[in-house]
Length: 367
Image 1 (cartoon, rainbow, N blue to C red):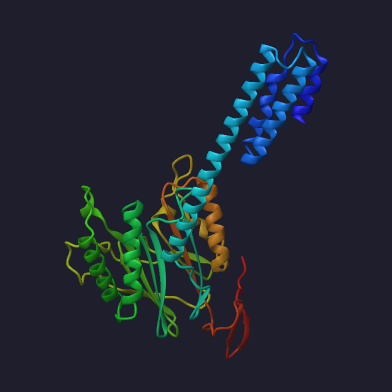
Image 2 (spheres, one colour):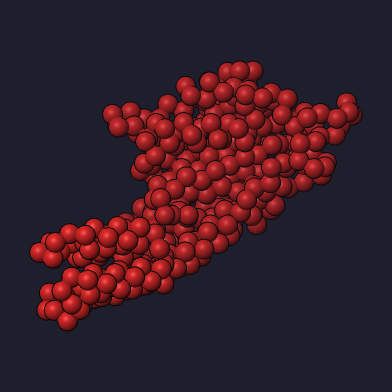
């Protein structure tokens, strides 16, 4: 339409007025949305229109018209080159994203929606918009009649943080089945991480400061309690009977502080009744700031949604966090919600639980 409009107007105006150079707008605009083939086609149509204008305004071989045609052709070719470069970089970015997403799925495998008597939901929010992977981590392991949960945050950044996170998660999936207590499990993970850091030392001055804050949680199927062992990680929040409270934890060093002695971590037991929800998170959530510098008030915000199921609760927190920060996170954030149901899941499809009392819906306490 631009080509036709410019051509008609130029033909109708006196020969002293030259509107033909405006035809370069057509291929220039096409670059923003079209492929290289479409840009080349529009460029060829623009050059053809310029030739028509030249024929009707004094002849095709005049120096002015020849320079305009050649200039328009050169600019159209440049537009095609820009399209080809853009398409190649877009393909490279798509490939990088594909590899990143595959690495993320391998590192943070999707958690089951149900395991034992628990409903589970999780999310990972990356600080970098194009990122799909980072140093925050979570994992779940089923051992006999109990469920063990790990959430952690690597101090380092970049590929080093990813390597340390992968090492810890691999160690957890193996050690979770070998140790009867959480403090023993924490010591085993600490030993594995220290061995990893020793075998793959860094070259920067901060190598001795690499560590992982973590929280280990154990939830038995038949006892209405939960046990946790902190390793320098923020305490979880418990939503019970419409109230939100912070689970008390004792101070403990992070994992990877290899110069410290092992055997100094303890386990804390607290009530975890049917219908209660635990929210585990990394510090990227509570340290997120708004434009005024205020931290995200997680505990106060959770009080708005005391009856949400894990999936809806995670979604509410995610949306509220992005609204609080204006969509710009300064640090990655991992969030994990666990709710104890009345009975253990028996392998039926999602949304259906079976027990001695008959059939129950999966979400009896909607938001």
